[in-house]
Image (cartoon, rainbow, N blue to C red):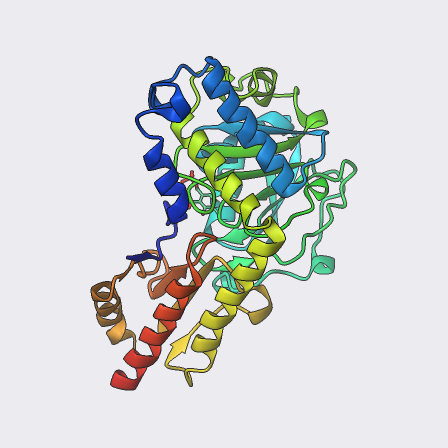
Length: 360
Ligand code: PLP
């Protein structure tokens, strides 16, 4: 099937086949990665290679730490203010969708978040122009969600924080490793793995080293970046198999030629799908402003909304699954992450045209 789920999402077939071939006996060790001690030399080589390949892929500068954690991006909504702020600190939030809103709400428990821009009144279809942002001069950091998975809104460029310390924090869960990113523009990048780079259970945090070590006193050990950094993500038992799978994905992305090449493929897939929507004479609609449409999550509705259930049912019969939009917005959503082949998007577009011909 072609799986258009928003996450956990489709993984590259060759990665799954490789994992299968190593399932019982990882490279002559006589053990599955699932059975290995996280302190043994075999697993150490796996996690170190995963980190080193990720550093190559994203060209991560040496003054940044890479942490492989647990708890999903949702846990980072708390961990970030706990590690970066005092309870009195103000933090600026630009909220362009539901995930940014969740991060904003969670931050209230640990600092003083300020909503400096929200796209809610326009149903989260826009990104603000950066010079219209009224940033708080002494905000500890500026938080954005680089790609809103539910609403399909993606930053194509990033605002510069105007606060004294200039820290930009980004939730990249749903466009992580989908294109090159200048990591040096960010204080913290965080992402759940389960969209572009692996199975659920692994959360990746890329953090500038000077931001580590100031956690609030109440911070649980598991949320303290210093503890994880000092222990190379091995303070407690990490999600070993998930990290191994992420490592296989990183190898695959490097073999594809790196993130520039990956981005080219993603642009092509996005163009084909958005063109099909825009050229349908209103039969299909995507509400998101064209310049900020996500290359990862493509939400669309049918002019005749009563046909949406039929669309999803017929698509599933043709082996295109998980096209239902998020329960909070309805309609359809096609998530076309790195691992969705061009053939999957072409098949979906052909189906959309055929469906329209039959129902227009
Ligand atoms: N942020 C974004 C952009 C997401 O898409 C998601 C999940 O879909 C989350 C945060 C929450 O991630 P998790 O379920 O890993 O906690």
